[in-house]
Length: 153
Figure 1 (cartoon, rainbow, N blue to C red):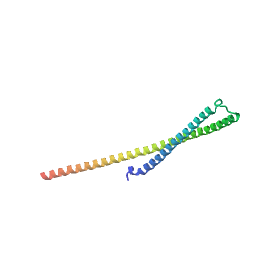
Figure 2 (figure 1 turned 45 degrees about the vertical axis):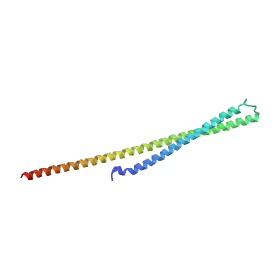
Figure 3 (figure 1 turned 30 degrees about the horizontal axis):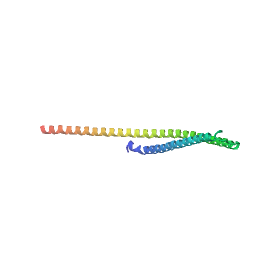
Figure 4 (figure 1 turned 135 degrees about the vertical axis):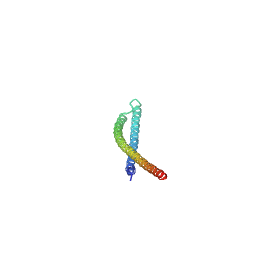
């Protein structure tokens, strides 16, 4: 069996691994995008809430002011948690990107190696064909010489 044929199963495995890594990478990108969107929404909500619940926006009694501050504190906690989720998603994205690049490089290297094997095999085939052609020409030439020799003698 030719080397180019023997390497095909290895190439197939590498391509499947690259596809899986691509899927993980895309999923990590989507997760990060969603986490960032949620963080933006929370920050926008906090800004709107602060604007509408700010002292002077209306007459607030002490209890309403305390409730508003407690709610803002909880909202700030949620925002910090979401920021940590965004950071985790960024980290996971970088890991997925790194894995994808490794798998992509491996698949590319195997493709190049298979191409090199095919090139070597084609070159060897061409050399054999040329050698065979040369041998036929030598035989034809020696046959023609014999024919001429037999005709003249």
